[in-house]
Image (cartoon, rainbow over all chains, first blue to last red; front, side, top):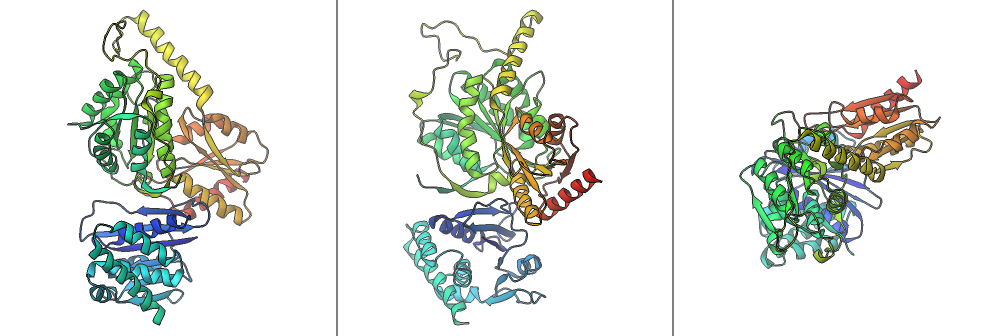
Length: 178
Length: 356
């Protein structure tokens, strides 16, 4: 079982990245849950969601102490970094945040998701850069599953599909080099 | 059949549509807006009716009319909105019109907040509006159950001619999980209603009414309702037990907290503490038999009710346990959801008190 907390600014694609992960887990026949934090939020506000991918039945859908944190901006990095399980992983968007978690019992990966996404074709695909890195580091879902979900989701938008695919692959590459 | 990823709110809609719901009336309120949103798209596709009413009061009275004409009808709201519907629900209960009412609970009292809560337990299970009546109350704890319970709610409601409430919380509404959808029910299969005011057309005259002004007529009517509730109590109590056979501490919760409680039970077991849990599925009728059976066991030292309230279901737990074992309570309100650790701590404290 892997518990993933995705957080960032509204509009950065935090919730859609969470849905991609859950859909990919389901695609592989695993148990999944996706729980968005909801509130009187809007574009520019905060957004986060908890995703669990598991071989067994999922009881609690909460990610109070996640195994992995994906933080797309600085406020969510500093807010949630203390909650990550000891020995866990943090992926932080280096384009918008420092990477000092103030603790040494977690592995922090600083990924310049903004720049990489721009290179992939659209800054809005930063979420997929992070998703790619997550898959490469944890194997929580297979790369093919995410790619299949991207194809389904953007079936009618080939350009968007292409950008997201590229961003996802670049995310895989950036952590594989290290 | 393969599973698809659905929000709890969407699962509720699919459960309704697939069991013949062809009329939906609602008024927006967080955290259940996805229900009317989904219904507004789906209802026209299945030849049904979607109306965004001018208020919650109007919506429930539209349900009264549509369901009275024999259509499977539903409304949905969240706590403050469900309070507004209570007059209509009482009328519907008196007129014995089957229908489904969804309450995706948020924190109260008053307009309160929009985060998950379970403060409407009393309102849902003890009547809610004025007069002597009950609803059948079902509490889903997953998207799959949100679908399945709403599906079965329509059959239950028609079987007894008693309105059914789906009592969910904000988390069940917002969560996305794999759901296996039941097949679409053939409308022709649904039994005809010999009481529905569906037009005269040579049939006998039918009247649905909640004004029964003569005491000598109202008393037998209410007694008849009561006899139905007794039948429902005998037939429909449902709960899921988990590891209670040898449990020293029996936790209980419904809806979302029940899932966190289950995780807490597993964690307590891993520490060597014999914990188990009971998850009521029907809140009315309350599954008191399951609690009584647990209370009668020597191994059971105490019960702990975990709720997103200041302590409401705990009263029914106490009635069911009937003084045989101590019953403790742990709750959070205001839209806060307890995590596993808090529940584990409360369980240990309860056990210590019972043993102390």
